[in-house]
Image (cartoon, rainbow, N blue to C red; front, side):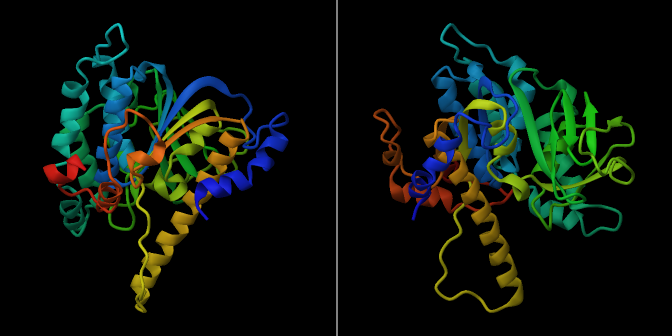
Length: 355
């Protein structure tokens, strides 16, 4: 049974409550558009860049009110958030310098491998792989910028998973917060470190430590862990552990949701390994995949029940799947090849980028 069938099966659940309290207990929905960028390493970074190129061609970028991202999607979102003020929009709301300002720097970066170097660096006493990733992001993309250097609108939110609390840390320009720890107003955390935390794939590239001692962490309702060590240092890993679609921020605030999913489907294995390590990694991957499927079913159910307007596209679906008359040609085989690309931060060839 596919996700669409399940969504239709549970449509009545959402329809029955559509006139009552929102299914996700959203206090107030804004009549705005939110874009979610999923995880998936460089594969996700490149895929979301392509999606943003298409949104720009349609004159859609200035209509975005929220952009939420996790993991590889945060690399893309981080550069877009930083370079947004440099974009020049014409009378059709298209950024005429989009390639120069945003696309080409990301494509150049996708040709640089940083994960193996980071792993080796982490073997040295007193050093971590995460610190190497932070430096690489800063050197090639962010150049010393902090969260206060990104655009105000649209509002960008970078998600990471708090290994201390099991909840999510949300980082934006106006505030950073973990609902169990508290909130920081106008954080000055380096953008490279925030993106590194969001894309800190375990166990090699995580954890990323963010020093909060220089920030004022204020208590909020429900912040049962507003105390040391939680308010002094955030110990973070990939945002995809908590929510690999980046939905959490957007679907509780936006009436219209766009989801770009570069997640990789776990392949079938006729003879699964009996080795403990292999079993462990496959089991964890399957658990994460099922969590993502559950979120997708809720998303489609809300769309079918009229609680949200949703546009969803994924890397593993051919263009014919969407029944769009002017879609770029993409066969089932090409979509499968793109979806099978590795979840890494190592160099992607020109042919792989074109997929």
